[in-house]
Amino acid sequence: MAALWEDVLHNEPAIREAAAVAVDVALLEGVLMRTEEQPNMSDVVNYAPFTLLPSAVPSALFEQAYAVQQDFNLLVDAISQNKEFLEHTLASTIKVDDFTAQLFRIHMQVLEEGLAQSVFLGINRSDYMFDCGVDGTPALKQIEINTIAASFGGLTSRTVAVHGQVLKVLGKSKEASRLLPNNPSKGLALGIAKAWELYGSQSAVVMFLVEEVQRNIFDQRCVENELWNRNIRVIRKRFRDVFEKGSLDDAKRLYIDGQEVAVVYYREGYVPKNYDQQNWEARLLLERSRAVKCPDIATQLAGTKKVQQELSQPGTLERLLPGRAEAVARIRATFAGLYSLDEGEEGDKIAAAAIADPDRFVLKPQREGGGNNLYGEELRQVLQKIRDSPERTSYILMDKIKPQPAMNYLLRAHSPLQVSECISELGIFGVYVRHGKEMVMNEAAGHLLRTKAIEHADGGVAAGVAVLDTPYLV
Ligand code: ADP
Ligand code: MG
Image 1 (tube, protein in one colour):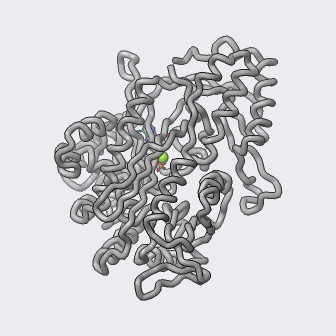
Image 2 (image 1 turned 135 degrees about the vertical axis):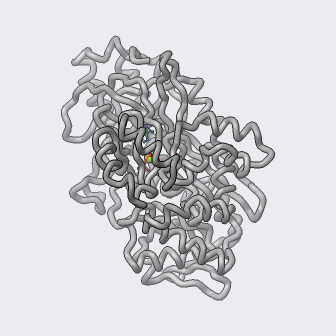
Image 3 (image 1 turned 180 degrees about the vertical axis):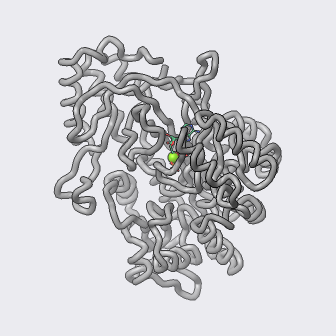
């Protein structure tokens, strides 16, 4: 696996030429990001970071990841409808984690009031790494599933063309023709369009709920464009706009600026810093409404790390997906070891094991967006400090996945061209729509490969660590 592209990797003139072409094609294809200096203006934009060369992905594991995606869609949807499961699983977490607790409070309030929403839209991304076993055979292991604001489906729809041309420039036309087509932005839009249609009001709009800082707007525009192409009107609003101008009518229809909203697609609202008091009020208003939320708050909670850990407990998957033994087996095969740090003997034992051998584990708080996990010496120190306090229950422990590194060039604006030892993470986008009790759409909608230099333990593309990539199946 490490030997892919070996013949050109250190041919400096060829690499330089290919990199220059790669950057221009990325700009032409729209693999774009706004700049750090001007994150809310498109006057000056840059290319989103990406690898020069596609990375090797074992085809059996790639197929396995696609084959389990519909199962994960069903699972997430089942969790979101299971009040008791969420209540029981998050009970210890919400005692110590204010953010999860606040989400949970809204979830309960909406349930008590009675759900006004009858159409449900899930867009998630299940992320994996290829764990290298003792005998060197890679295995597909899930890192996490993102049930809110799963990004880069838009930009990655445009990286295949870039990598295809790079391979051609390097004299590898045959390899270029083997790159798989990939268009998550279309798949995501088809889900949103289906939810919009089932909502049943021609004049209602789709609202993208966006952050105050919008560097990654082009990724979202890819999906927006697919909707406009289907004659569905899209508006972009922030929590602040919803707080100031949003309202519900007697039937809990959501209006903003006089426009009825059929679907709220969150690209915001997944980390504490997205919220102040007003934004929490806006979130509550949205959740109480009849509009289709992607995701609703229960589905967001289904994506917490604590839920992921609980799913790995014996019997849990079987209870959530009764009568679906094959789906359960497919899902379980992707699980790495996950451990609760709840108070008690089991938690004490695993905490001690992690303190003794931190490199075997990753320590994860209930946070999204990259850069929050703890590794190695830092893991040891933090865990030592909190091992006897209730605070430790706001974390989970996970076995550290150890993929086989490969050499590549990471292209970033204003950065020197140099070869790096890299590892990759494969994400599969899942899209589903439920109408009342009936699943009317359940799809795998494309993939995302992200690659980073091995010296970074954590962090995604938005965090400036990983870059976009394209899988080359081997
Ligand atoms: P976030 O919600 O912040 O994205 P993740 O669970 O995806 O949290 O972790 C962030 C990053 O940390 C991942 O993209 C991956 O690079 C690394 N990581 C997470 N879990 C593991 C693991 N078990 N083994 C190795 N690396 C991991
Ligand atoms: Mg992640």
